[in-house]
Image (cartoon, rainbow over all chains, first blue to last red; front, side, top):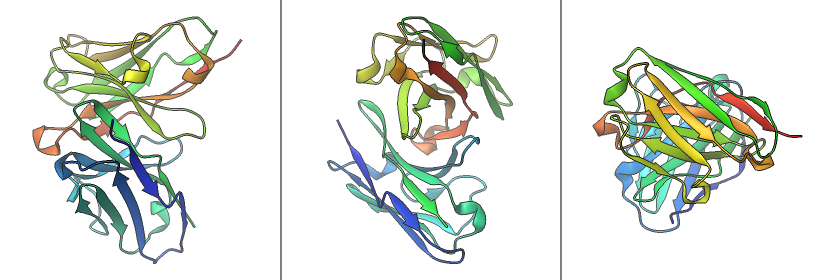
Length: 107
Length: 120
């Protein structure tokens, strides 16, 4: 079973800063099946990145994904107030879907 | 494109619940669907998925046996039956649509979730 470990658990930054979120898999994985989501209280989760580095429809270009199994990164180049949320990485493997434990991005 | 969950609420331990997810704005039968849950203060946890035709399902190993996913393509509705409810089933349950093939399994549309509370 693949385990995704996200770091840091909480990231405290200011608007305008650059955020770097990490997701590490417990074994080598195929980057095509790595996605990132944003979750805000009371809202539907939002797909940001799929296939490790492709932005989903409507996602601003300040969001970017990179990496290859087992280490992946979500970067937000210049934080906007609406970016403060919890971010999850997800992997789709032969056993189904696995989520990381999340990184809370706070002001 | 929209997903709207319903059916959550307060339930007794040992009881059952059937969650529903109404889909609109896309050809429902063409897409695999999933349920994902989030316990209070915890992260996202994948529960179960079903293919577009409804004849193939798979679930998280840790949850097999009490959770049954199904769909009614004539009604554009996804279901999750939860039996023998436990306190640890408390949380928000989201339905999610799998994206097209080029999204490699990612969920491109989610609902806002329905809250389940299991308590006596």
